[in-house]
Image (cartoon, rainbow, N blue to C red; front, side, top):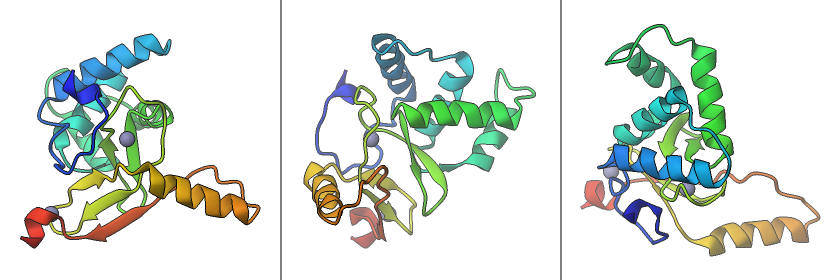
Length: 163
Ligand SMILES: [Zn+2]
Ligand SMILES: [Zn+2]
């Protein structure tokens, strides 16, 4: 399945035109790792993948209230589902815009990646360059600092908006 392969990707939409396929890939990853993708987790994941753009928690809650299978979904339930998806690397949280995006490679465990965020169309692309992450980690350790999380978000205009 294309969504599971590792590759450099510059198209923000590439991993989201098939959110059902993406959820299926995560389902497989969960089975392999002994995790359980409950219906609510799958639903949250599907909505985030469907968005194609970073999705804020309150937009997510709104969407959970609408659509089929909707009904009273308590916010804490949604937040717990988000925590699960984040902790296992199926989605990323963009701190600077306080929103969530689906991860390009759900078969990989939790990982840090720099993000390129377009301020005009609000697309967010993972900058798949391990050297950037490794260089930051190395420099921090050289200073005696033990890094536990990296949040690197670069704002600007994407190729499409800039062109
Ligand atoms: Zn990722
Ligand atoms: Zn853009």
